Picture 1 (spheres, rainbow, N blue to C red):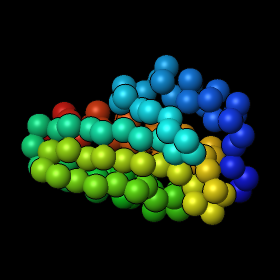
Picture 2 (picture 1 turned 120 degrees about the horizontal axis):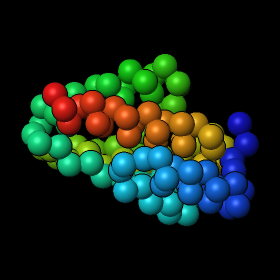
Picture 3 (picture 1 turned 180 degrees about the vertical axis):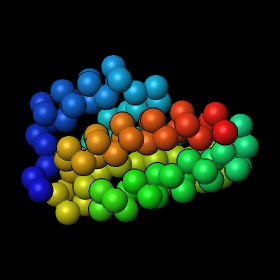
Picture 4 (picture 1 turned 60 degrees about the vertical axis):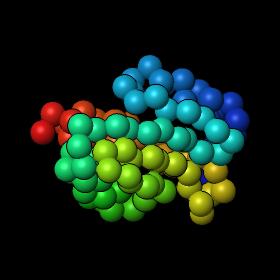
Length: 103
């Protein structure tokens, strides 16, 4: 899979900003955000749901968890930058975060 050029990534990012609730940031060749959940259990429910989706997509995030916070960085290492998979996973993560925060 080929990485997006700067213009393609910017256009995809603008669509993501319009549709997502998370405060995604475009930094160099990756997407970043942080979620803050009510507690550790919600954060873990979110991460487990994302793990299933990421495995289905065969596209895995770089992430970390501290108590109720989950930090995420998305990029496609094989392509050397952002691809459509990163934006697809970002959208899926946004939906899963909403679901997890309601549990």
